[in-house]
Amino acid sequence: MYRIAGLITRLRARGWDITVLTVKKSSHEKMDPSTQAMIPDDVKVIRTRCPEVIGLARRLARARPGGAKPPSTPDEGEDNAAGQPLLTRLYRIAKLPFRWTYQALSYPDPQVGWIPIAAFHIVREARRGGAVVLSSTPPHTTQFAVRCARMLKRFRWVADFRDPWTAPLREPRYRLSLWFQRSMERSVIGACDRVIANTPGNRAALLAAFPHIDPAKVEVITNGFEPIDDRGPGARPEGPPDSDMVYFGELYPGMFDLYFAAIQEIRARRPELVPKLELYGLVHDEDVKRVERAGLDGHVFFRGTVTYRRSIELMRRARSLLLLLPPQERWATCVPSKMYAYLFAGRPVLVIAPPGDATRIVSETGVGVSLTSRDPAIIADGLADFVQAVRSGSFAASRSEESLRPYTMESIASKVEHTLLGENG
Image 1 (cartoon, rainbow, N blue to C red):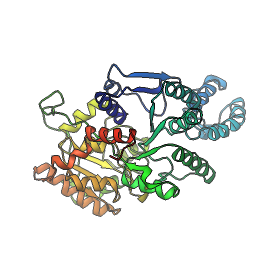
Image 2 (cartoon, rainbow, N blue to C red):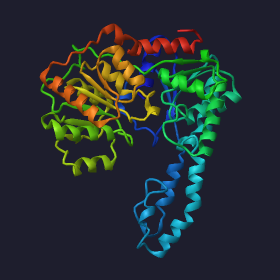
Image 3 (cartoon, rainbow, N blue to C red):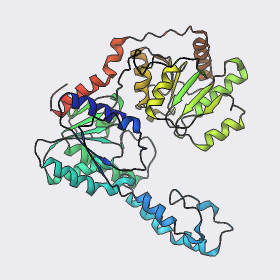
Image 4 (cartoon, helix red, strand yellow):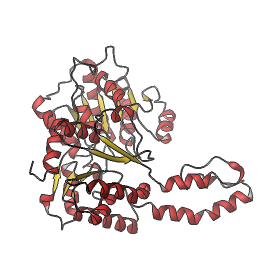
């Protein structure tokens, strides 16, 4: 969301007449008022309905016998059938075909119902002449909606992949599902004029998965950040930090495992250096429970979600910032969007991730340290040394303004503008 809001602001300032097509409400991404407020008032915004399969599932579930609490997904609660009334059990059996239908229709994602609505509005806007469409995803339904519109009306189209679709493949998928989605992605990439990948690794994965693509058609434009003037309203708040490190964003399955194992190692060998970590964002209940079971709830604090603007304030007052990725190689091309905010926060950054695009950025910009081992003991040593240096104030970063400039939103917007115009940036 921030990438798009930043691009809209910068491109509008460069004289572009912009129309934004989006949804009124989506289960895929929460609406953040602080980023929506960034969009200039003179930008036309079209908000439409977005029929979602998961919404139909919830409405059907509300009609379940006995008025029990509806599940959040068609699968939820299936393990609790024992002891339920016979009518409820029969209902669950009858619901099986619907569950299969739900899975079959959720391609490329549950927002698939938006395709005809989005295509209609895209064609209507394109018929006014001179349109250039930038489709930015996920959800990947958006890309396929533009693909459908392109069959009805010719216009210039740049497909921006903020996250990969099937290349590289982050999570395992059934063979039929992968074939179907990769076919859709191939169709999108073949029909658009240019493709934007958000990291060099993701570009390489696209070219490997779709060898028929002209490499010149696929370019890398990373995410970026709008630097905040220390003398203005975004200045770092006064007062001491409450913890050694702060983490922002969702903890995906497996992302917390290596860090958790490492702090247990530190507790066993160097207990005085067990870091205090605050996490802001969505977490899984299992991560919370295992921290409590291990007696580490005095060192790991789950703070819930905050707005984007508040997260920036918290980053700038933290002692240091933490970025985690699962250790598997398929995550090596991932650079979470918060990394770009971290770059300009002026705080030491610790990255625990497989060697790849995120660790490369840390090395190039000199903002912190990367730990790339899968061995918890090695991670523990590096983490303890980092915490000790941060606490003592002896951590030495080699960051420079020149190394950060490519990641400013102004630089990113300039590259996107060249791509929209069909120029080589």
